[in-house]
Length: 152
Image (cartoon, rainbow, N blue to C red; front, side):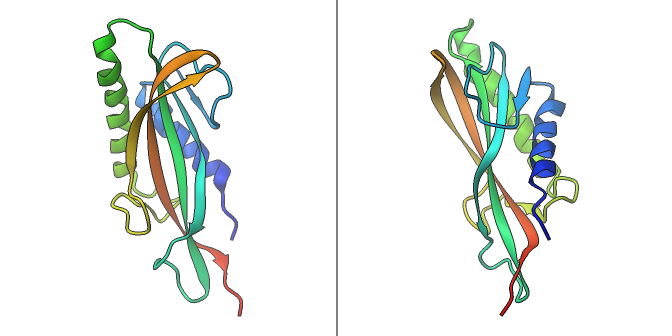
């Protein structure tokens, strides 16, 4: 079996677009300034065996994606920056909890961290192409069943 990474990444992007909160959603970490509104980007962070989640004949994997939300730091009212970002974040977290298998593409979103770090997000700041952004980076852990065959 092969990892269908394109379909998985597209599905995660579709969740963000379907929320209605984002002006743009990229399938990669942007190299230029993401824009003036609320933006998102999705990319692969880590892949490896899902310890304790594999059988004797094949290896299930833990695929960790980053989903980063961006909003410019220079905007008014400043007090609305975090609430607007958190509203969009809340919609995505609800989508990942509600579509637990991404439409059957994965075994599960590892919400509680059975196979590593759980679903979570971290706030921060980022300067890209001379523009400053307030960001929330979601760690989205996905478990994919029986990806790699084990041959003795």
